Image (cartoon, rainbow, N blue to C red):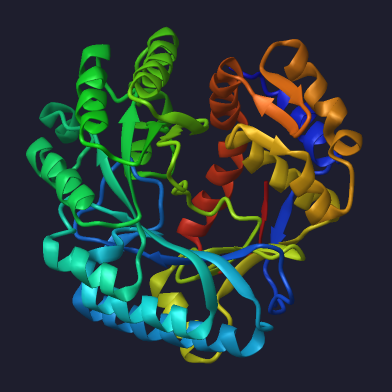
Length: 425
């Protein structure tokens, strides 16, 4: 585990500053021209609330969804009227459970596609219990091209332990129907290091998913967020996870099984068929978010909408942008954000860095990458830098100990207060 002393050192090395980040309340101007921007839509409703889930969501009620739906349409219209015409690389839809109201969601997708020039993929997260064949047809007709099915595990006992309301049979059926539906790409999410999970149980999950012909598989450890229902009920220290040695064996086993099945690692936790395009969330360089708790990264600033669905609806109803907190970005911080996601994707391309920042990657971050290279966690190539298999595990650990600390503070505060004055990260 990284000791607290290391955190400010890592912060200084990556961002070029000792000062902590501060996000403050206040008006944020609409973004101008952005670099490789994407769009994000957050649907904050679920029919059942999983206790380990850290994301902003509330119990689905048709009336509340209807009010949310109208507010999002208005936020889309306000933004489209104030952002210069430009191409967007993708639309990503997350939650919550985006398909709690498939017809309403299809209307939102079409409004986004009519309002912005989206030239890339439309990607969506799916819950195995909320993706029947009619839903899949609606999504395809609305322009969705990539699916991610949140299986988590196919083991009934583990599903019950983490509070999922679907069983293994439902998960397996959902994956098979998603693959058969003819979308451009199907990703399946699995969780590992679940409470009480054995290596054999993980192997069974991997065998099923890799045997179904999915285009991509993403595997995530269960995180102990203190503000999740599980964290608040048990206390962070009481959340039982496998030992560090077993987590490492699970991480390695996932890589072994995926590579043997013909998939290639495309990110720290993800594996992809070589011929397919990668499914990913808000790893875009810039993006604009819609809905409660949606973030926006525009180059000039990073901001988040209010997490409160009620406050979001009220703000947009008054013609006000629903931004709760924002932080200006220096050029160095924008570079650091880019580096974070490229390291996560295992490939840090020199040419892309120069195109985005008109700067030399080695001059800006070469010193930072020297230590990982000496430790065998990264290598230098003519194209840039590559994260090694050994480095992938340590990036996973770094994210657990360092970057999730920021998320805990920001999301924890915003879940409690609709309009916080400031958050020090």
